[in-house]
Length: 616
Image 1 (cartoon, rainbow, N blue to C red):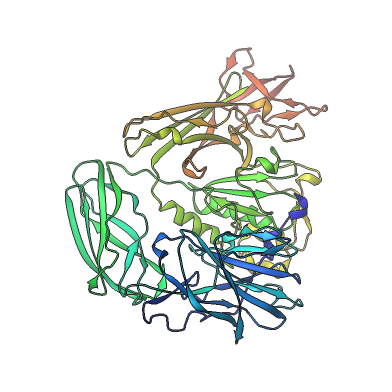
Image 2: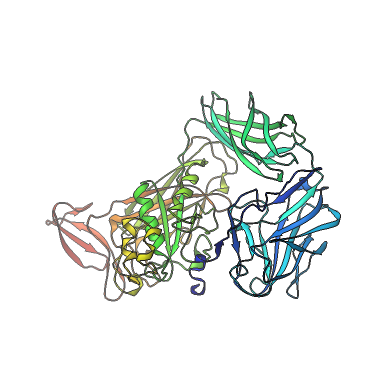
């Protein structure tokens, strides 16, 4: 794992590219398929090596069947030191003898400025549900542009990004997490005015309240979309309206924009069928006017969604201080923030990186609700500066959770165990609720110690002050390569996922009926990989309950402090490295107490050792 440390720091190079999609799109039923929806937010990706590249996008929309591919264009930062450019079409991505082998056609491309293109002599009719369109080229010498020769759109889209190279990626890899290829494909056979919406799914609202619904409108016509008329039914309630877009959608296939409309109020809670139709586009009949179906769940109370940020870090990692700072700031700004910090190869490591809930591609990295494939920076998120992770957290918090979550935890059996209980209340009746799983995570705050594995390595200097402008970051800008004495919060010290396993909910669940799930942790087993206790202070432990979707993403979560601790008592490591925990508290007369009281207390430990503690 160490060979891949900090690999996220220089993968993407911002390219000074814009306007690639500024040409005219609409003419004679022809529109453009591209990940570049007119955005100027382009970046460049590359291996920084002299090698051969194959880049592809996937056309996987059934409505494209019968349409014809007429031309393919690929953007570059520069044509210098680039040769043997070809564009191609294939039904499968195949590599033979380390070379890409397209099974439909391949054409030589020519450069016009920084764009390589080819026009098909005979347009190719799309006859399959899935088709790949791509381009290939050689990097003859490395330079500032050829180190990162693949132009991407920073925003993800359905177009995707697949990559094969002769030295680095010897098999085709789906790299869509890094962006979408800016490749353009001219496709003909479209109607003038056509649009549809992305899947509606489930919409949630409150009784006797209008509900804002955000729909993604997608263009499928060669006139683009300037306006559209819609109609809907929600149960017995009907509605309609006209939307004039502030910024019309261009004639790019699946160019999209989010539009918010209001659903009329419904008086009774329940789950209602929802149908939504785009009837007209630009004042003309929509050639794809079909009813999109979903459901409208109307509830008395809406659950609060608590996003979970998971950070992957290690004290050996010199760039990891930004995760440390981000957690401090998020806890400072948002008391309801839930952070889980997974440590690797240091004094706080409790699991191998192979057992992380997400596959961390490097350190530091982060995830939010396990929905971003651990591809986030723990401080900037996906932005270039600022506390961008906060923006992602806020966006996730706006999403509706299927159930509310409450959790409680307490010490029991003379503090030998921590009992946990999570309570879930769902918005709707379910007969497949066993798709949801429950995970309990035990978290420690204020962990600290001495020795090299507690000392945070640091690559930041006073030149980086502007990158994290907060007092919490000041210790890292003093020019010290190693920072001792830090106190770490949000540290994951145990998870039921690796101890007792995930718990499935019952299949049948009724609306508003609480569902309880219990679990426990043995305090003697809350140790790092060296066997040292990570319960340094019994008052600074908490439990996080995670409600997991069927795909492993986090649907909702809650946190609670572990109650029933003995104030001021911490675990002790004896000279043999074994964990010693307090098991009982007595007053001066030998009467057992439930917790420490003012005055003299006699604390008994699992080893038999007793300690006198005076509480003021």
